[in-house]
Length: 94
Image 1 (cartoon, rainbow, N blue to C red):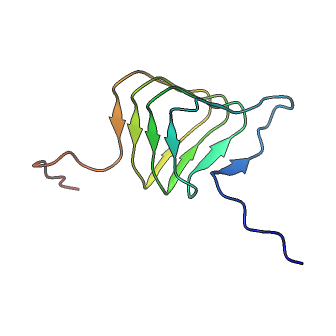
Image 2: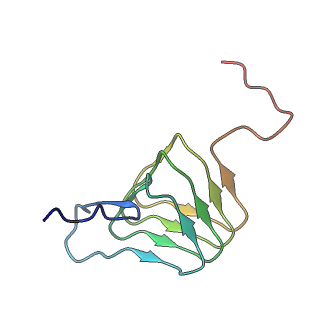
């Protein structure tokens, strides 16, 4: 018998042992997101696909992170922040 595919975000091991992820039950996290151990995600936050969040990062309530986005370790992202894709009507020149 083959084990069913697990749903939910990919868990990336943290460099420090004993750090656990804490994701609020009211947050929405894509199964294609990579969430390291020690990450805290607040209520009503949305983490989209192709997002990688490093160990020890704290994400407050009502944060939206769209991919492709990579966030390193030990960051703080405060409430109502929006990261990732461009806002409607804005252009990016690179």
